[in-house]
Image 1 (cartoon, protein in one colour):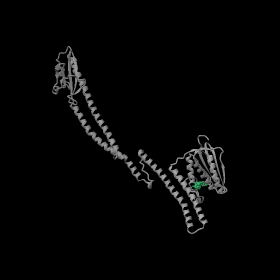
Image 2: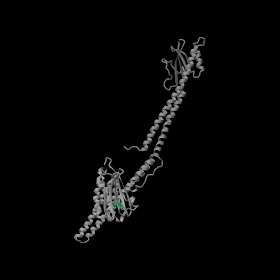
Image 3: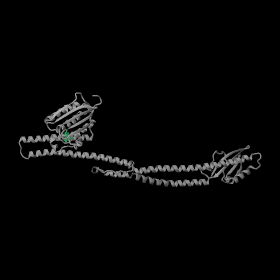
Image 4: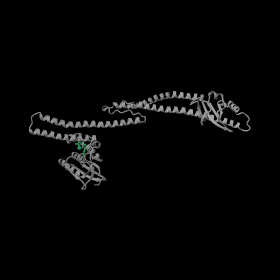
Length: 463
Ligand SMILES: Nc1ncnc2c1ncn2[C@@H]1O[C@H](COP(=O)(O)OP(=O)(O)OP(=O)(O)O)[C@@H](O)[C@H]1O
Ligand SMILES: [Mg+2]
């Protein structure tokens, strides 16, 4: 079943609430008015019955000479509302009965009621009050009444007015409510329309933000922020894919050219061996590149959470130094290590940490000309493990320093083919340092050398 639109639901709820409120108002206004009329009439009846009481009591005074019936008639004829009076004795004989009362045939009550009542029935033309009066040895039944026609007519008119006006108010209110909810939700429609049109092709589009300071402004801003993040992430991925394919194209092109050249005519076994060796070394570099790309792709997907264990950083760096000194030796670069005798415990992944320091040592050797030197040290400083790789190499220009940790960034692009770097090492290194809640920093002077510092938090459970 199709659910109702939000604006219709809002309007229906609003109308239902309005109907309830108006009906409650109508019913309570009507009954309050009716009650207030009855209270006023009843007070007046009470006062009139008191008047009759005085009259009857006076008749029993010793010096009283008039006939009680005559006094009652006189009273009835002179007083306002007196035409509605009747008095009977305990046997039910009428002492006095006004014309109106006898015409309306109000009976003398068998059981007088304590409060005034409508006669003959609810909302009928008479309101009657019964009172029993004792005077001398006599008991009298006094009944005073008021004609309710005018009041009932007024109540009837009010009832009719309410019955006509409430549905009209309700109708106007319902239309108003629907119009308001339509109007209030229009911006949501616009958001939906714009959001529908945003795709990969126009990720830079943004929603219009209504300056209303309400939830809709908040929603549009939140969605825009989300689009901003998506766009950045998407650009990063596109850039990464473009750079990666570009990097892979070069070695493939080199291998293809070498193979084609060698196949152009018959060659000696040595020539073929030479070509295959060149292709093999190119393949090794390509494999390494693919491995780095895959590593970065994995870090981007965030799929791997790295399992941390208590490891000795000093021992890890010692192993890296074995590889480092071999690299340095091949380039006639002096290699010095300064590692503490006691272990430096940190929480980390041995394999990743080895990779991090190898990246730095590899760079230090790679960017230091022969006769230069590379120095590596590990120490504990202020509760942090600090690994330092210092070289006397070509250094990094100040303009390049902020970028060297970016993917595919190489300070000297022309050299890259010779050195074989893809510009990925340091971005991998930084990810590893940060994954260990650590940092990596560099200081460098072109022509004098560079120093890379890795800071990692020490393991908390002792060392
Ligand atoms: N010790 C260093 N001395 C001088 N320049 C450096 C040093 N380390 C890094 N660089 C500069 O920073 C750039 C980025 O280094 P990174 O390790 O990320 O890439 P790469 O060494 O070029 O390639 P890859 O490490 O992927 O093989 C290098 O191209 C180089 O220009
Ligand atoms: Mg490198």
